[in-house]
Each structure stands twice: as structure tokens, then as C-alpha cells.
Image (tube, rainbow, N blue to C red; front, top):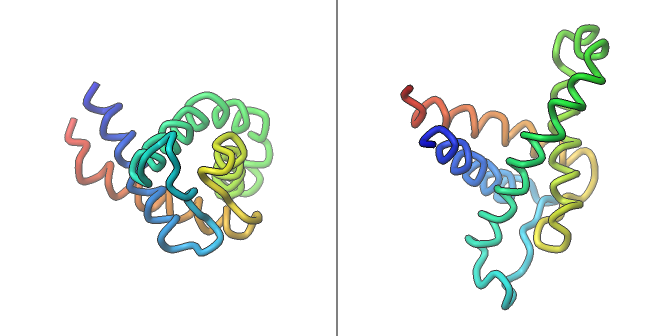
Length: 123
């Protein structure tokens, strides 16, 4: 249970870093349904976690020959596609404008979530 919470918080921190560092990745404006940007960020982190849990393994399985051919670098493209899918599912509350910003955002999310998991996951 602790590991799930750590991963969820790592996703939230990583998404916040991507929103802060990449200009074309935006978190939606405050509205009555969520109340604050923090709540919106947590909802988007939940969506991002579910996309990575359900969709990403299937995409990796089907792209296995390409992953082997590129020595795993195609994972960066998959991460960008998962971020774009999260933006599509989240609608107006999280927007990713273009593949380039999704690629950079996916790279930032990977690095930040790795660092947060390294610090807090002491199993």
C-alpha cells in the first residue's frame, strides 16, 4: 500500500514539474468542480497512473521489436504518447500541445519520478 502511495505522489510531483518546466503543458484553470489546482493535479496524476498501469504495458508489448531495435530508446516515444493520452482523457483540465512538448514532458516526468521513488521508496 505504501508503494502505491509513493508512486502516486511521485506521479503528482513529476507532473507538477512538467507543467512548471514545459510551457506547452498546462494544468486547467480553477473551476467549481475541482476547487483548486492541487486537486486537479491529483486527479490528473491518478489518470496518468492508470494509463501507465493499463495501457503502457500493452503498447510496450506490441512495440517490442522496435524497442529491441532502438535499444530501449523508443520508450521515450511511448512515454510521450502516454502523456498525450492522459491529456486527451483529462480534457480541459490538462492539456499537452504537440508531440515535442509531450516528449520533453515525458522525459522530465521519467527523471523526476525516478528521483522521488529513489528517495522515498525504501522497501
